[in-house]
Length: 384
Image 1: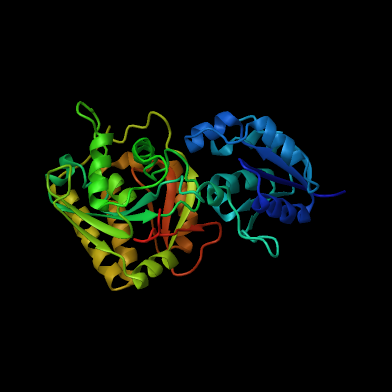
Image 2: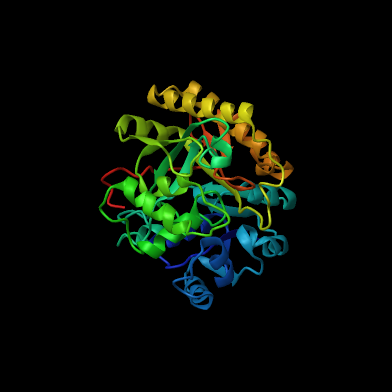
C-alpha cells in the first residue's frame, strides 16, 4: 500500500515553485493537499486572495502529482489539524518557511514523520514563490525585525533611562503573517500612503511621516517609532530615545560585510500569531534598574555587531530579551517557553519578534538550524 503524504498552504497564484514542491513531496507517496480557506488567508496575511478557494482547489486537483485536495476546515496556522488527524499521513512535508514547532508537535502526537524540503526549482526554471511574483512590480513594502532595545521607544519606558533600539529592515522574501511581531500593522498603514513602494526620499523623513500617519491625534495607544523606522530605513539602524516618542538621533550601517554577517547568523521560526485579547501591559515592572539593563544590552549588542563578535552579540541578544521579559512578563508564557526550549541546543541566543506572546522566534546561530528560515536585509539601493 502506498504511503500517504500531506502538504498544506495557501497556494495562491499557482506557479512553478508550487508544482516543484508537489513533485518532490509526491516522491514519498500519494499526495494529499490541504489549502487554506479565503477566510484563513484573510486573517493570517491581512489581504484578500488573488484566486478564491474554489479556483485554487480546481487547479491543484488538476495536477498529476496530486491524489486528493481539499479546503482545510479550521482557521489560523493550524487550520489543517482535523484533516491531518483523520488522514493520519505517513509524512507531513513542508518548506523551510512552512516549518513550525506546532506542526512538529502534531506530527509527534499522531506518529507522522515531518519532512522539511529546501526550495529547489525544476532544472532550467527560476526559483519561484508567490511573494517573488507579487513583488516583481514592487507591490510589497519592507518588513522589520527588532534586534535589541525593544520597548525603549515608548516614553513610559525611556523616561527611566535613555537608550537605543536596534532594527533591521527586511526584504519581503516571504509574506510574513499578521500579529507575529513583524510590524504588519504599521506596514498596513504604510500601504495606505504608498500602496506599491516607498518613495525615493530621505528614509528618516519617510519614517517620520509614517509614524505620524499611524498615530493620528487622539490615538489612545501609540505605536512605537521603531516600527516605522525599521520599515522605512534600510540596513541596520539604531535610534536613541530619551522620554519622547521620536528618537533624538540615528545611526545606520550599510557595510556589506556586517550585513552579510548578520544574514549568516540570524534565523527565524514561526510559532503562532499572538492571541487576541493578550494584554501585555496587565503586569509590568518598569523601573530604572530594568530599563538600564535593557539599554546596556542594546549598546553591547551594537558594539558586538560592529566587531562581528558572534559570542558577544549572542550574549547581548539574550540580555536584551531577558530585560524585555522582566519588564513585560506577558511576552512569554509556558507555551511559548516550551516552544523555545528545543532550539536552545543549537542556537546561541533567541528572542521573540516585537511584543511577543507568540509570533516569530528570532535565533542567533553559528550554523544553519533545521526548520528555520534565513532573512534578507534590505539594502540602501535595493529598489524596495
